[in-house]
Amino acid sequence: MSTATIGCGFVRESIPEPCVAEAGQSMMRREQPSAVVCGSDVGTLDLTAYAGSFKRDGYACLTRVLSTAAVVDLRSAIERVPPSEAVRRKTQVYGIRNLLELVPEIAAISVNPAVWQFVTPILGDNAFATRAILFNKTPDANWALGWHQDNVIAVARHVETPGFSAWGQKAGVWQVQPPAEILSRMLALRIHLDDCGAENGALRVIPGSHCHGWLDDEIAQWKERVAEVTCEAPAGGIVAMCPLTLHASSRAVRPGHRRVIHIEYANEPLPGRLNWKWQITPDALAAGMTSSSERKQRPCTLT
Ligand SMILES: O=C(O)CCC(=O)C(=O)O
Image (cartoon, rainbow, N blue to C red; front, side, top):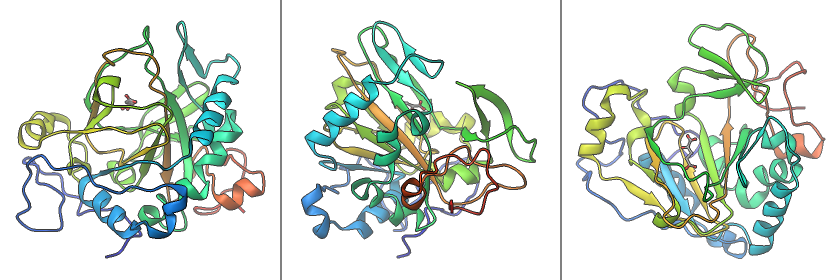
């Protein structure tokens, strides 16, 4: 099995079919994939199984990826972010945009080997982190999100380009809806900084919904045909997800914190004169470069 891409046959269908390699596989509720790692278990991790599970289902739940100390450090780094347009707060901070730029620790963790090992089996060696956002559910920002697919990327500048629409700025950064094919080849890793069970507003996903383009009016059919899965994760765990996987989340039953650092990765240049806003690779980070915005861009890597 090739582990370098996540693309499935990209056909817009009115009746969704699961994106599974095995013919006849049931679309009934499944157990969550059992990929389980921690730093000391890296040598025994079956990354091929992880990549296969992700390619088939459009998500994977990974527990014990980061140590407690690493989680505590990330929480502290987030607490130090000063107020700005990128920080959304009620009584407590419930969202922060532009994390790859604002928080060096987040840029670092995005390409840390403990995390990066879950990027390259999906996206290959040309992968880079391109956007990171904090989502926190707190007592006064305890949201529920309906079923949807993620549909925007962050780019360096507004450059009208065929296939790219819905231009807008968020916290000073241009966001645009790319063709669905681009999102289908991306990966999001959601690093959990708090234990997150069903009662704490965990992400819910519809397996196999990631490789059929924009689902628009077909969401109801998917909900009817495929049982949703709740992606529970302990603090230090990661939920891997294709941005096109149908996902939703409920309000936390007893909200305290539900901090998730949502990091998106890609592996290809954008067409024409469009550039990703951020392209963080291990090498780029070591060289102190995190943004593509004011630089002539070479495909996929910063040098
Ligand atoms: O973190 C969550 O609860 C969901 C975030 C999400 O799905 C989104 O913003 O698209």
